[in-house]
Image 1 (cartoon, rainbow, N blue to C red):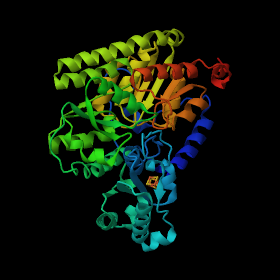
Image 2: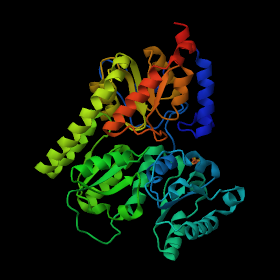
Image 3: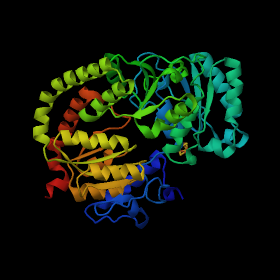
Image 4: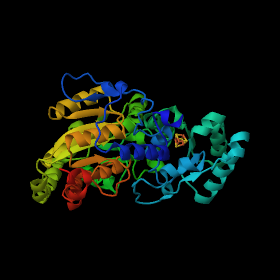
Length: 472
Ligand code: SF4
């Protein structure tokens, strides 16, 4: 039965959420028995994570196909063809805020639009003709073909079709093993990394480039990558390749020539970083570009890696200039937000750490924090970073989120597009920190944008009219 699935397609999830939240009103919400070990609300830490979503719990996780699209979509000069029914393609069509400084082919999402007849007789011919037509029309540097659920079921040989078209057209045509039923978006991330690694090293040059890095796991939402790149370039660091924000196929071809990989959003691209380390010996460090502390650390860590005094001094200069400009501007927001309560729920766990620190910078208390794909180790560290009593959740669902938002009486919920209606239905301010956002929140300037957005939402007079607040 559809509603028994742990991971739902978008429309089924929305209907289910809506019914549950509408019914909920003021009644007590209990955790499902089998979910209890994935929630930590104080006492000795004994959480479980990295499990299949529980049937019936309506996980916020999305499917493998969606995970692959998230990672590969921002490659702006590639063709992205979804082999499947049109519904899968619409799920991700141009809803992400990844910007490009040049071509914008990524914003056109193509689908083979599999119909009943294709499902019965197979879709390989349709896929072949779609690829030929699209490559002739748009002249992409590479093509990614995403397999969806139905393709896995009927067994189309996507790889064989891609191989044939690649030979005919002379560009990489790569099958992405992203059938939705293979798991959650985490498995999709892996499929995307496997696809990317097929392009790495194909420029035919081996020599590494001096003081060079790859920025992995930033998707250039609202132009954030350009902010980060500017800091590194002011330090004298050369950025070889960005995966995948403002991404270009020719840059990915030479990703193996960078001396260091900086990995943000570790869940999505850590597999690629590991393959680069294994195959080419390129070390990696993790970074986050959100908040003053983590942004500064991301710059200092690179200077430390290259062990270069001039670079270290340049990093210090960048940080001092940016922080000196930022702090006076933050002051009025901090004054109003002091003591307000926040709940945070994101896709990957690494971002949660930065958000907890950023909210502290604004004087706010984090009373609930969690992610869709964190590990036990992530949550242990998170419970140590947060104040005692903060609820830590793994792979939660709308009802649990509503329970904790109500119990903790939060003023602000930070999440993504699936969490926004939960906040608004409960009469709580919301800040979008996911791929759909149109505001740059990374870097020092991003911290100021974050403060403005949080302030506007939390301090809005509209919440006094929300039923939950009006009753108290
Ligand atoms: S790939 Fe499967 S689970 Fe994902 S959107 Fe398409 S049908 Fe739904």
